Structure formats: C-alpha cells, structure tokens
Length: 394
Ligand SMILES: CC(C)(COP(=O)(O)OP(=O)(O)OC[C@H]1O[C@@H](n2cnc3c(N)ncnc32)[C@H](O)[C@@H]1OP(=O)(O)O)[C@@H](O)C(=O)NCCC(=O)NCCS
Image (tube, rainbow, N blue to C red; front, side, top):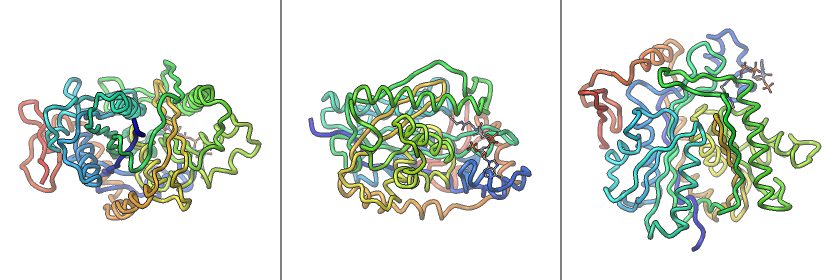
C-alpha cells in the first residue's frame, strides 16, 4: 500500500481566553513566571455552553471541510479524551450525529490520559494499512478541557481545545512511518482524576520526571528499531506540550540522550515553531501534541517539504510513544490556508472574575438545566431526562 498518514487537520478552540498577565497578577505571581517559566501567554477558557463534545464536533467539521469530503467517507470515528461526558456513551457517538457521519462506521472513545488520541491514531493508521478500511477514511479527534482548579500549581497549565485528524492513504499533510515506533508504558501515579472529581490530581514535579523517563524509554525503543538514527535525522520535532516549558525540557533531555553537549542549541531550529499556537491556547491534553504539529506546519519558517519529523506523545499513568513521519510537499501551504492565527486572534478576552465564575458554573455542568435552543451551532444546551442535549449544526 502507498503511504498512510494525515490527510487534513481541523482545530477548535473556545472563543474565550484569559490573559496570563492578568492571571499572574490575580495570583500574586510575577507575570514572567507564567509567560516564560510556564510558556503560556493566553489560556483558553471554555464557557458553560462548551464541552468535550462541542469542541470535538467543531474540530471534526473543520477537518472535513478542509479536505472537502463528505461525512459518508468516514468508516472509523474515534475520540481520544480524558474529559469525557459519560461513563458509557462515548463522546464519539454525539459527534457522529452532530456531524452527520453514517451508520456503517466504528464509533468509540479511547482513554489513556494525554496519550488517548495517539492510541486511536495508531489504531486508525493500522486499520488503513491492513486493508480493512477498503477505501474509507478514519477520523480521530483529540478533545479535552484541562482543569486543575483555582489557586493550584496546575492552574496556569489549563486550557481547552480539540484537534481532528483525518487519516487516510492520501496523506496530504504528513505520512506516518509504520512498524518502527518506540513505545514505553509504566504504571505510575503522576496525574489522575478519580470518578468523583472534576479537578485532576497531580504530583507536578513527579509528572515532569515521569514524562522525561517515558521520553527516554520510548526514544531508546525507537532507536533500537531504527539503528544509527539520532534526532539529527529530523527537520522538526513536536513533543507533547502540557505547557511550553515542558517541550524545552523534553528537547534538552532528548538531545542529551543523543550525546549532544549543547542540547539547547537546536531548540529554536527544531522545536520553537511547534509552540506558537500552544502558547495561545494552553494545555489541551490529548490534542496538545497535534496542536504542536499543526503549529509547526502553520508557522515554521523552514521549508519542510519531504522532510522527516519526529513526534512524541506522553500520557500520564503512563504510556508514551515516539514516532516519525514525512511532511508531504505543499503541506505547509495547506495548513497556512486555514489561517489558524486569525482564529485565535478572533477570540474574546475574559476577566479573571468571569473566568472564576465560569469555573464555578462548570462544577455542575453535567446537570445543567436545559436551556432554550439559541445562539451558535454545536453548543451544549444542558440535560433533559438525564440526556445531554446539543444545538445541532447550523
Ligand atoms: C508545571 C508545574 C509542575 C509547575 O509548578 P510550579 O510549582 O509553579 O513550578 P516552579 O515553581 O518550578 O516554576 C515553573 C518554572 O517557572 C520558572 N520561574 C519561576 N519564576 C519565574 C519568573 N519570575 N520568571 C521566569 N521563570 C520563572 C521556574 O524556574 C520553573 O522553571 P524550570 O521548570 O525550568 O525550573 C505545575 O504547573 C503543574 O503541576 N502542572 C500540571 C502538571 C503538568 O503539566 N505536568 C507536566 C508533565 S505531564
């Protein structure tokens, strides 16, 4: 079979954000800590009419529109998320009806913290490579609302958003290499969210160490399968970005594993452009790696046509994967045509008071009384007879 990979990408973010200088001042923190120490300038805030479903559905619509294909072309629909809305019914089922995907389709949800989307992506790639897809395409959506709670160390590493990835044997953006990915999984308690809690529990410094250990394990496995390869083989690298500074730590670690005595020297050339969109959205959990990849394609000043790139996915708990792909000629123009910086610029800034009010309202969002259908399409209206109700696509 010809190459398999990413045909199109769609991005959805809430139309609202907080400015990190405002948040720092409200928390009595030096703004430079959030701007440089964390690496975020604007943090997406999801209003109460937004949830993991609406973000996923809007991202899916954007990906289908970008590829100009009908929802009927989709034979596998998977949503990777760690902020699902139901213990049983998957986010993907809501997306199926909101986006109009047909009934002859595998529809399900995957979970392993921030790795959940990558698990679905690898499965979709193999489904196509195996021939089982028989000409159909897969739609993998990474959708999350990252929440640690007010006044916690994790507060500046929240965010919200979804990235939809159209996977096919016509990879107009990136073809992904089969077989030779590097994997690492280890049962740890670095980040978790028990069923009774809206907020995540995290041991922050330990989670950073677990991420770096998993990077070393997955990268070593990748190198075992690709003898002689170092990160010099890549024209760009995209890491999982829970916050921008983490990508810098990851790159330093990776280059040190390669034996580079100046491991920061290549950061600007290989990694910096992956962070420009992430810095304006914050953490989107499952989608963070794919937002970083999108950011690279949208903003890298380096021509990447035909170049090999490396990707690293990490999910707390933990499971990680290092894999590689090749940028399809014209991919950067295709992603630039989406004008994602304009999408981010069009958002409304909310005050810290409004953000705190939204956080309080989200506590009971799963029992939100049903509101009248009004306003923009693909919005969460509330619950009727224990069923979530959405404003359909316009
Ligand atoms: C990321 C996290 C651990 C940071 O917690 P914290 O207690 O604020 O951490 P620190 O005080 O070490 O500050 C963070 C960084 O800002 C830097 N910093 C502090 N004040 C600063 C200032 N005024 N100007 C610039 N940088 C500053 C620190 O030096 C540190 O950088 P370093 O990591 O390179 O040492 C916390 O936000 C968290 O738990 N987030 C959720 C978990 C997560 O994202 N884990 C990632 C792996 S999955």
